[in-house]
Length: 77
Image (cartoon, rainbow, N blue to C red; front, top):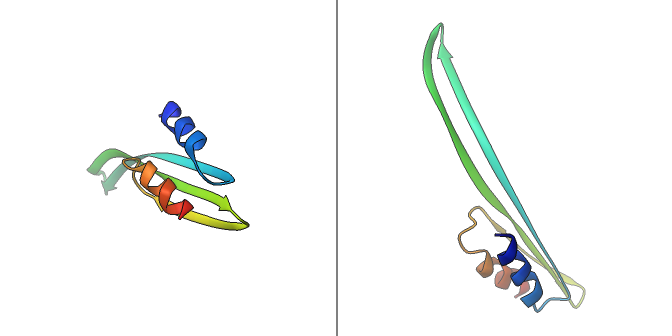
């Protein structure tokens, strides 16, 4: 992932490009009275791409790491 992000930053056409990624890990334990009702965990990832070009900012927000390259182009356009 780190190599992909560096490659994308180096290949950006914008004067300034920033890519932020956030991962979340969630756990849930739920009781009904004294009885265990639900237990589980999940993860999520997403982020934002910002591009500065000619004094204007382009922004694209994503909730999946699947196609970050698309969001880089979207922020630049």
